[in-house]
Length: 593
Image (cartoon, rainbow, N blue to C red):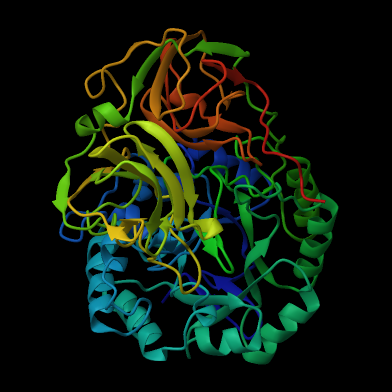
């Protein structure tokens, strides 16, 4: 019998009445050395449960390879720490997670096949899911409640009613979990809309809702859909996420607290989305695509009760007070904000241009026409395309189908312009200085769409490229993933040299060192820099872009070490000053009105 069961209007845990008061805390968005701290702060806010997704794409980057379960992806360790803190766990293994995460968690090797019907009972898709579960579940089952662990419930798919209505697919997933030893309570979650609930739920499986307001209406819709059983909001949106070029979203703490009070007063269970958002480290952010492509920023602070850097916010205290009216809250003091690194300037005195040294970063493939990143077997990062231009003079380059997602064009090494998917750009005027001039196109994957029909949209150059109507042939296509365990930013991969005084507006790695007495959280500020990626001591912090809203990147204390530390930037355009600043103050941008 499962540890967590349902009654006509609530939950029982080991036979005793139990209300789930949970918060989302994604292990893969938090440095592993900080998991215990964040879990403790969840318990001190009054939460008795935490929830996490599982990103299939990172755990199984190779369809034939083993499951990755170490470092940031050591899910068994995370579950053990949650149990040691006295917290239960709601596990949401996918296969699709959305989560503003690259590709919604679906692996690039899977979505690269245009013939597979994603999130359906297509046997090619379900076979891939079955293999994933074959690998994932055995190391996790010891942490399930049936074995004395903290996992008390497992989600079947994720907001499926907003995507499809293939009940056979949902039945397959539920059966796949059960046949592999999952005895715990199963649940679905959908937006509190009658059509979504009808399409995304499964008989015999608890249906839950996702909403941030209209509490009474949302709960009434849940009850209309499911006459008996617990009422639960599996995603109570306490904040929101940000896109590059937009505002920083925030939700008033008093407003969130008032709606949480309404929810708990109705007897419902809840999972705060997010309790602690964390960070889209490296190349893991997702994107939305409704009328236009819109990539998500590096920070996943989400205006959550616990900030991106792990400090309790005013919202933390406001929600804690509400929870205390309905459920026991530990009689322990709330931790004070964590230590911050004193402001530290970093002179970026070494430089290595990217284009001349690209051969050290990836192996090229020759092709008649440009190959997409998917065809190159590449999940994330960049691709560099090279060919020659047949004749000199002014001309118009046309990129059939556009670019995925942002292309910088160079002629004989000189910048010629930028094309962006979000602006639907496909043409660029160029001046060709000589016959046989080298055309180079550096394309950045800005993040895979994580919601809706555009999941799996190709990246890189998406079709033939022509100059004044003449198709350019014989391309060198070079993947530059920059996201492996050995990030190729050091002297062993590219030859750094003193920067000198000459400014240059071409992509280049910049490197500097700085001293740390006692490691503490910090925020990387880059005034005068344009767009690129940052690594500290080889740890990929993520993207920066002066487009905003985000102005600083979070540097977790465990990334730093006493003594000398290394900062590397891949600046894609140029900088007005080869200096960076580690500051003690975050800047996520101006808040939405």
